[in-house]
Amino acid sequence: MNNLLVEIYKSPLTVFTLNDIALLIGEGSGNTLKSRVHYYVNRKKLLAVRKGIYAKENYNRFELANKIYTPSYISLETVLQRENIIFQHYEVIFAVSYLSREIKSLNIRYRKIKDNILYHPMGLIKEDDYTVASKERAFLDALYIYGSYFFDNLSPLDHDRVFTLIEEVYKVKKIEKQAKGIFKNA
Image (tube, rainbow, N blue to C red; front, side):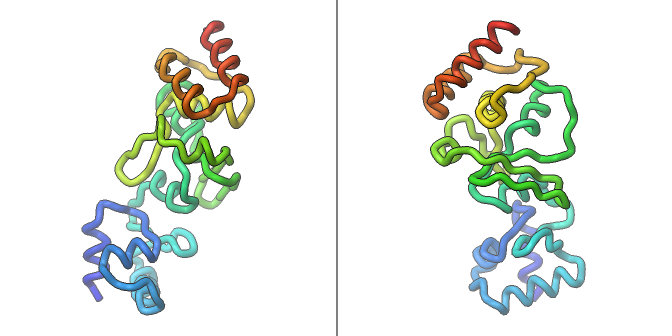
């Protein structure tokens, strides 16, 4: 029985579904595995973060956000703040996914984007065990989702990369026009 916990803690992942755990230990994801996982949850060796999602004590919140709704990636204010493009501080993790949802108890907000954009890999970075938008993609996600947005500092952005992403991923003339106007006025 300890083998399960040892394998979980040896893994670089910090957040797991039952299927993840089954693959990790090479066992089916049936009721027996569920019982074993709940045994460790009850003994506070694992956290039950959300139905069907378990985590180590100091789990990665970005990894959790990607795990709750898949596919998704960290973007918008979370990336813009991290890259000093906006100066406002947000405790909420902003992610882009196939639906719009807010999980207040976990401080995660998902914004819906069209599938052709969501599934396009350009401008997405695989970090550890989660996916995050590049600063240019987060900038364009904000324009696409919000329509208009105030950015405090545009100097970290690679303008050529922004327009390549517009052409390859977003394919929306309105966003191209907005980006040109924002860069012109900066």
